[in-house]
Length: 161
Image 1: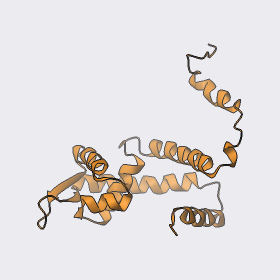
Image 2: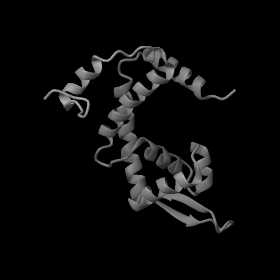
Image 3: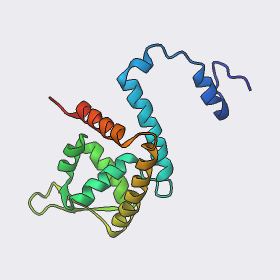
Image 4: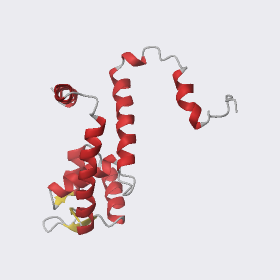
């Protein structure tokens, strides 16, 4: 099957098809390189978490909730840099899977405290083991010194002056 303007190449041809593209200045751009790395890391993460269907964002939320039981929803949204409506949607998904529970805050009836359920604690513990294996796999081509340097450089990009 030969691709035309209205079709996508078959899966087996995608890599070869992409290799034939001229990338112009893209490889020189930090954002492009970071995005390519992120896509690679996220693919491996998805494979690692396939049995639970946990996304990187959900893992991050559950990790924060597990480390800070009873954290207020608004504070959680602030900590990860999303608006409250986005946080509510994400928490609804986790709650729907039985992994978290929200209880009204005794000091503010409009606020909810978020905690992991016992099922959520089990999923998080299993996921942490998988994430450690995933991290080793994605960093396997780096020396310990390169890994440390990369982490330092990434910190420099997210640290605000």
